[in-house]
Image 1 (spheres, rainbow, N blue to C red):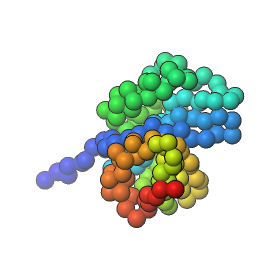
Image 2 (tube, rainbow, N blue to C red):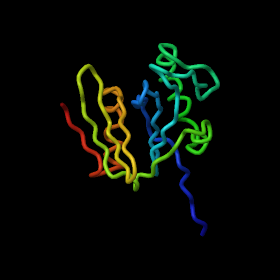
Image 3 (tube, rainbow, N blue to C red):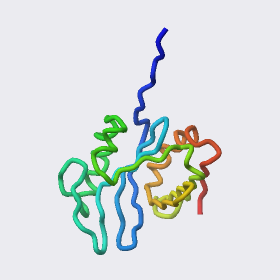
Image 4 (cartoon, helix red, strand yellow):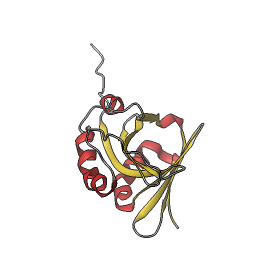
Length: 151
């Protein structure tokens, strides 16, 4: 009897912004059964350079915000390794490498996610509604490593 391999698929995702020294970077965050994938969308803010979006279009400012949900949906149907291959800056974090993930619900419908790995810390701002949509998934994937709180 042969072994049946489970193909890795995207289970959910959300869009977030990571703060940079000058400005911020818009990322798409995908959750699979094995890892979290962070895919670059656009660098925005002071000193930003226009980057090609994941589909070769230019994505900046309001135009980039409008297309975010559409891109998330289109990419969610792709295989995780295909998403990683779209941009050399895309990367994955295995759940075993995550020390902790804290979600702080802030004012005005925004939540901050503090993701701590063994060797780095990533701070993201995301929609609180989007976080609510993946809360159960995060709890199932990360168990006691994830915490939610309101400020």
